[in-house]
Length: 233
View 1 (cartoon, rainbow, N blue to C red):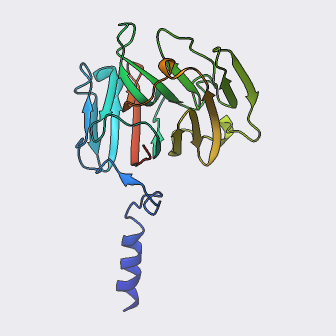
View 2 (cartoon, one colour; view 1 turned 90 degrees about the vertical axis):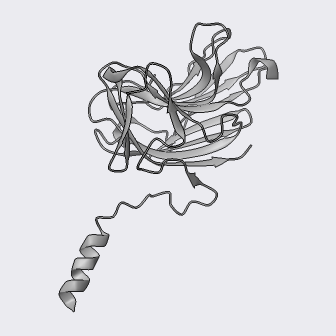
View 3 (cartoon, helix red, strand yellow; view 1 turned 45 degrees about the vertical axis):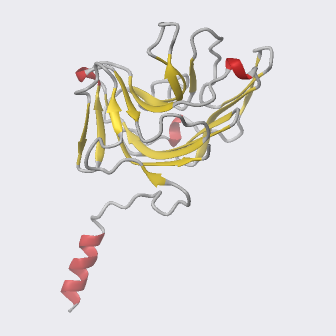
């Protein structure tokens, strides 16, 4: 009986188990088999595919986004997932995304930037403001940004923030995004990378919208798995 038991144990170790599977209140929004619940934006229809439980975006097949369609009017949320870049690339997650009425972008959003190890702190682990018509502030990796009511920024350093050394090059990295009201935080591999709080008048802020995964550069490849979502509002 020893050999069958050992064989069974060996088989079990091959089964991929989400590190977020037991997180209270989180729901899986990627089934690992299809794009069900997700829709590519125009021009990126052939850029996204699923292979062996992994969501793969390929930049040379069309730049653009992959939109979560399960709820397209989300205000407050927590989101967890794992990502990796087999090579170089620039990607990320847009939250509270809405169509840009100015025409300068396809969408306005708050964007959690992700890139390959070495791309620079202004991308990897930063917050980016895709907000035409208003000031787009700096919130790089290691930054804690407070935007005052008059749109003036105050930036301080986060103690023990994420560094490039904490990133697994070409390997899987775990992300946790928390957006509650006017405060937004980005954690990678368990460490706070960047955060911002904005005190602008409500008509200057994005209050709710879509979640979108991004393909930024032609020729890049990015992979996602274990995508979990907790909608708070």
